[in-house]
Each structure stands twice: as structure tokens, then as C-alpha cells.
Length: 328
Image 1 (cartoon, rainbow, N blue to C red):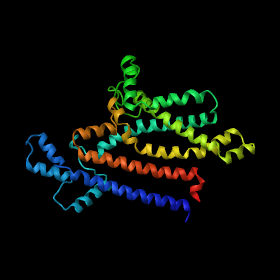
Image 2 (image 1 turned 30 degrees about the vertical axis):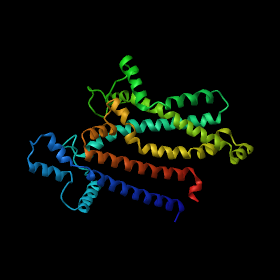
Image 3 (image 1 turned 45 degrees about the vertical axis):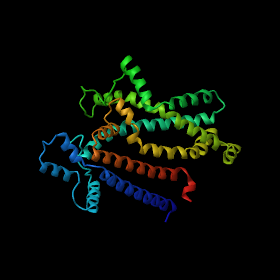
Image 4 (image 1 turned 120 degrees about the horizontal axis):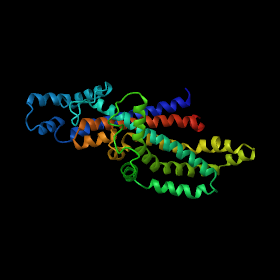
């Protein structure tokens, strides 16, 4: 069997074991906590619900008197069928429906911001490392490193105050205008893009320096390798050496970091989404914690875990493509 396929199967097996362990912990931890979701709702209604109603709610949350192994089997079957339980904060909405509604906005905002920052930062790192004796290498890295030192929320609040409140150039919250109805038309698309400019820009500017500096440093080390000197001696064009020989090898650490960052996209936009009242996963997680919504927290944590593992496996595939040594 091809060694590349064997490598991918082994890595997939490792990630499946990791996913199984994470799902098991996701099942055990809430059951170690005192009380249950149905009791929380019962306390909110101050005894207005009948005992039969409470018992039916406990059944819907999967909190039965069955042995733990049977509850665990029902939990796994629910995950495989997409049934993640019922939310407390948004009762009686199913958790899967709530997560899917926030997932779309988080992937759009944080995912697009991450990809744009990665592409721009990586290309800047390649260009600056190749032209490291010029003025661009003197002032641009410190500026981007300075911006990267600021937390997301600080830059987000600053941008919101200047461009939202003071200049009134951009909306100050939500994913689209209140007067716009969600539909696949230009009015809705323009409104979504207009509302995404401020939160996306803050996330891009803060993370841009990290991608650029990482690529620049690795690229400089790669340019000192013997095969680069040999390629120069053979008269290969500078552009080909920069992109095909140096950048292709230097990008591997950035790809690994991109895979990790891609997995944490679902939770990384938490503060940005709160500041801009953006209806994504981070905002949902905040509401779940405030309401002690264990089923929703479980669903979000499971989504984040699976996203991290899937992203890392895709990075393994990308490394196979970019690094021939892994195919030997």
C-alpha cells in the first residue's frame, strides 16, 4: 500500500480515538455537576410546572434513571443522528438547530478573516524575507507586531467607537440591517458585508503580524540552505527560487498553525462577537454559560473539538502535498 495512504489512515485513526475520548468527557463532565437542567428550569418557574412535566423534560435532556452505560449509548446514538438535546436558554429549541444557526455566521466572519489574514500575512512574510535588506523589512514587521500585541476586544472597541459611533461609517452591531430580510439578493449580501467590515478588520489586523513574522523567520532560515545556493548557481530565476524552492518548504510551520487556528475559529471570535452583537458561536456560548445551558455548552464544545480534529487532518493532507519527505 502507498506510504502516503498508510500515513493518512494512521493519522485518521489517531483523530478518531481523540474524538471518541473528547465525546466521552463531554458526556461525563456535566453528569458530575450537581443538579440537572430540568431542575434549573423548574426553579425558574418557581414550582409552576407539574412533576410530570419535569420528568418529561428530564427525559428530553437524557437524564434518566437508566444505568450510565445505557445513557452513554443513547448519547452516542443521539450524536450520530444529529440529536444533541434541548436547549435551556432557548427552550424548547433543539441544540442542533441553535448551533447550526450560529455556525454559519461564525464560519463566515471568523473563517473568512482567518483565511484573508493567513494569505496576506504569508505573502508579506515571503516578500519581506526575500527583500530583507530593503526599507520595507525595517518598519513593517514592528508595526504589525505592535498591532498583534493588542487583544481582539481592545481593537474592536476602538474601531467601534471611531468608525461606528464617531464617524458613523459602519453599523455598530448585528449581522445585517433590521430593515433587510434574509434572502439571496444583492440588498441582503451588501448589508451582510457592510456589517462584517468592522469585526472582520479587527480580527485580520490583530492576527496579520503573527502570520507574517512566522513566515518571514522561517523563510530567512530556508534561504540559507544549500539547495537554495545550488539553485542560484544553476541560474534559476529569482521568482522560481522564492516561490517554488524557498516558500514551499518555509510554509510548512504556517500550515500547521493554520490548521490549529482553523479549528479554533468556532470559539476564537467570542469577544468580537459579543462586542458587535454578532450572532455566532461565541455569542451563543456566552448565553449558554450565563443560563447554565449544559446541553448547548456540550453541543458547542463537541463542535469545536470535531472542528479542531478535522482541521488538523486536512493539514496533514496539505503537508503531504507540500513536503515530499512525508511521502517516502
